[in-house]
Length: 326
Image (cartoon, rainbow, N blue to C red; front, top):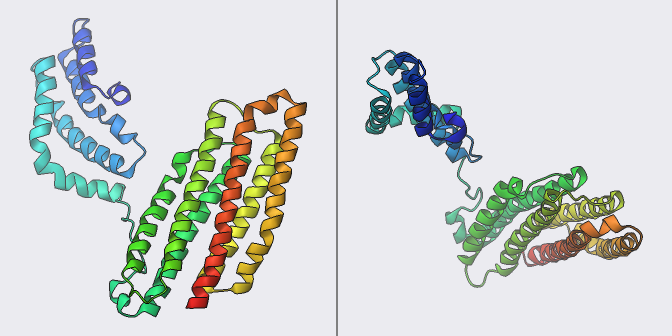
């Protein structure tokens, strides 16, 4: 009960009531101590690694205190309840290092997000520093691509949550900021502006992917889905956008100008496919009443896909610009 509601007080009140109905002192004490341990539950159920580690530390600490107290005489419901929590509070600073080590074994702390290639000493060699910034941009690009893959998977399965993209979004934001700060330290005569634009563009693409999933999720939570044709159209365009993004990222990392030109050459076809989806949606809107429920989301997603593809175009041009200057 305490695990479910997060309140040891409610369990203590329950023990008090049951004691009046014939439950013995040992049973009442067990209820009070169980409530003290179980109230850790809500912290354990939080989805973040930090909450899980904190919940484990508190659970170990309270359980270690409660087990030997089970065999102690019951001083009364409220003295046992207050005494247990007071003892847990006073003993926590002493026991914390032990419980922290144990929690770290069971739920290791995630490694902090940090650049992998941006070495400060390389700033003395601008060409090397530019190359390292490109390698870091490749990491950011991978995270942005995984976000768009998540959108495609969600559209196909018609289920997904914006929160699932949060770790990737955090990675893109953090590393993009690190690249921006890094290239700003290059000498003024170094062509650093294209690198700055590329980092900003990748952050923008990741934001667009998140917004796309947010719009679809909002529709699904209302119990509304896309029509089979509309879902197929959106998934196909997202798939083409994903393929173009991968080519643009590869061109950015390798300087393959032919690949960058191919990305740009594909844009009119994608744009035509987006426009065809709008026309097909309009026809469905005329023929089917149920299409009206998803119409705004469908059209909003097409706008986001247009913007995503424009961003891919800009990345392809930046790939040519960066490697031309390099």
